[in-house]
Image 1 (cartoon, rainbow, N blue to C red):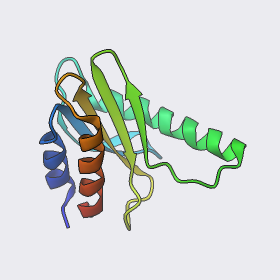
Image 2: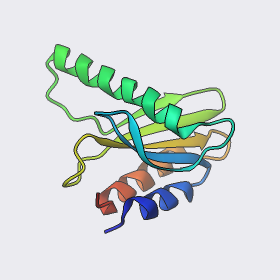
Image 3: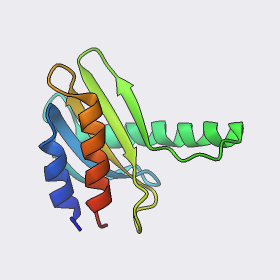
Length: 123
């Protein structure tokens, strides 16, 4: 099992990764971040993507969908933003956020690797 710091470091090793964060979507706070920089403030991204997760959960509830969100993908002109809701024991209310450079990333592989990181993460 991996801790938060190790998991975030592994996330940044994904091809094309720009930055990653572990986020509590009850509070919108990043519990840990890595990467980012002047063009990507991960604390702002954590808070903003919390709103995305909450909105999707509300929509699913209104629609009566009895599904669980695996991940949410936001595709921009030059980036992919991947939000992976954690389902491992003790991780309720958390998501992994990964920003990727669209030109260097393999989206399918990134999703696969993020799922593996989630499985090994112990919060």
